Figure 1 (tube, rainbow, N blue to C red):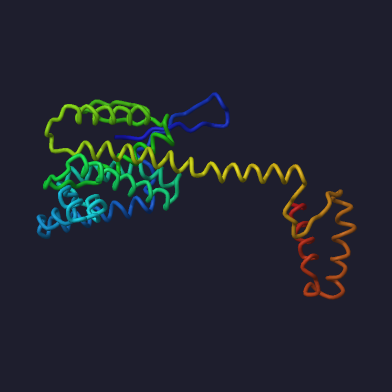
Figure 2 (figure 1 turned 90 degrees about the vertical axis):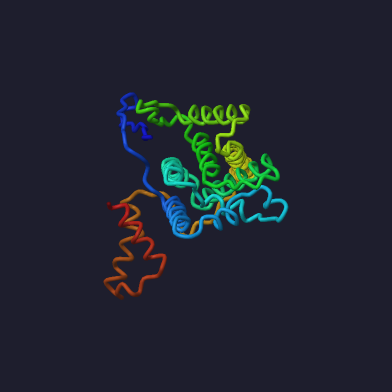
Length: 286
């Protein structure tokens, strides 16, 4: 999987494609990857059976014994090297730009809400099952759909059987969703929690829509407040307000008396307002 985007020069109709392997690794994504790797190492070193039973999503235990923490802890468990490598690679590729755009707090909300929702969907779909389910795929699918919603026309290049396939992010997500739906409808036992993947997509999509809708009342109130200020002339009082005057007139009337005062009494005698005037004069002289 590689990353491709376009950067434009100053001329609007001249474009140069800029190709790079992936985005800059952001702090929260880095911490999540490190935590997943640490837990995976502990899985290998310690008794994996205990890990799977108490920390993975076991539908029979989530509802009957209220092991609700499993809806969070299962995201940090993985069944093998390829499992964790693919999940962490996808988290890096799509999560870094998301964190840079949403911020640390919103990105963590998206990640955990998608992951918890994915675990809940699997537990409901497999009601009463004693088989554990693990992996960060549900959370990663939520990250993927959020990425496609924010950057729908970003090009992603996949290697499919060693052949490159370039798709827009929105088409990639639609393709993944269609495949997951087909797997669920086929009712085949592939050992993959497809309901969890679909749950991650649904909860990630719902989080993004809910986040923007929540911001609408605040945006409306801000526009209403700004319109009132423009209508009635309400303005926040400035600390020091100067009338726009000619530069030479400003220097002769404002700056020269201050310079004369400095020569008579020293710079320590200046008031705050006089210092602000000198500061403004220096900025205008640049």
